[in-house]
Length: 340
Ligand code: SF4
Image (cartoon, rainbow, N blue to C red; front, side, top):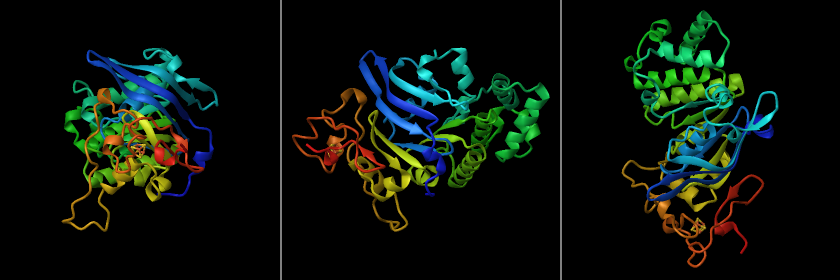
């Protein structure tokens, strides 16, 4: 965890306000993202954490308007501040519009957890990175090729010229993830959304990828939205943390406050369930009791109440806590911190 970066005092490059993304299924409406707010600042990393199914990835996909049917963004704003200083609400653009296509993969890039599903198996890697460069730059063919080779080399892929002519199945898992980072970075994005980019990798490759992202962030003053359930990774890379539970933000603040003084019982439970240097090899780690409920069976009151160690009967199962400031830096939604 590093010192507070200067970018946190700058205007946010992405500002998500009251975002709601719902899925309209035969069984009913699933509120996958339910009124989410956060900012991402230039040159800094916002980590979004929570268990699987808490709405992290749908939030990321909503920013780029790539939520699959039957999902739909039903409310909110995604304010993007361009390099010129002009701010636009991306939700004013149609998903398939020229404006949105120019931003998606250009100003804002995304790397996914499973790179194999993001590359076409029918085209060489060179064809695919060339398409991204053709869409988002004015470079001539040879310049695009040279730039792509340069990026492959920068992300540490050996024999980059030869790899340009190869199909994705010839790459190892770690090389594919690096290739995807090269493809996301070659257009010089101002924002990178990284959705569990290291989950499928061994720890050595994971450390190399995190180093690579941090180096590129420093070079380009790029903002990163880093989505993961891995708090070890968050401690390495994030400057700020947003904790999500069942589609809502339950805590947000600087990464050091999150680790030193987690406020929400869910944040505390997430942290006690990871091993520390002092955990002995035979010690059983505490786990969060129960599992995340299906969004259609949302518990009454505070959605975390059936699993919460600090549950207060007659309060937590009745009303829904608001996200409130508990100090200058942290916001929490929990009745432990609300004056009633
Ligand atoms: Fe736990 Fe109540 Fe706080 Fe919810 S509002 S996290 S149930 S103490």
